[in-house]
Amino acid sequence: MLAFGAAWHEWGSTIEWAIGAVGGWVGAMGQYRLRSQSNQLTAGEQALRMVELAQKREAVLSASYERIVVLEATARARAIASDETLQTVYEQAIGARLQVHAIQAQAGQALTEFAPLPAFPAVEILPSISPDEVLATGDQAASTADPGADNTHR
Picture 1 (tube, rainbow, N blue to C red):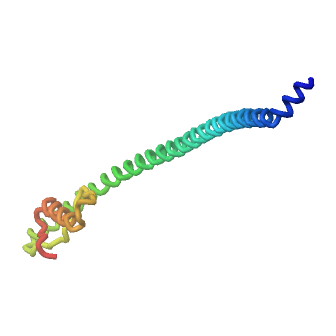
Picture 2 (cartoon, rainbow, N blue to C red):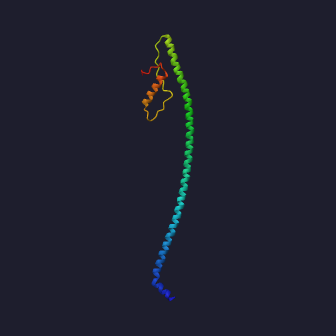
């Protein structure tokens, strides 16, 4: 036992230092492993949150898209009904002009100059077309719609 005490006295601080170093290294490895597991759990939770948010966003976008489709279908139905009404009014306006010209011609009076009708069907204004071009297109359409109208005077 005396030999052990002498060895401890001689090598004790070195042994304590070695045990401390090994213990510190094992502790650091354990801490690293716990952090790694914690990071994996945190990453998994973040991934689940991201999936949940993506699903919520998808549901909102789908509902919005469906609402837009319904609104567009309603707008198209109204536009078709409006176009049919406008076509009827347009036809009646041209017919009235022709009747007025016929009555004036029978009476020997000068023919009335009517203002040009707007373009029908309405011209869609595209970003590449200037409003002046749209107006010019409308004047041409009105001049072909009513041959008796004179569009040279404004």
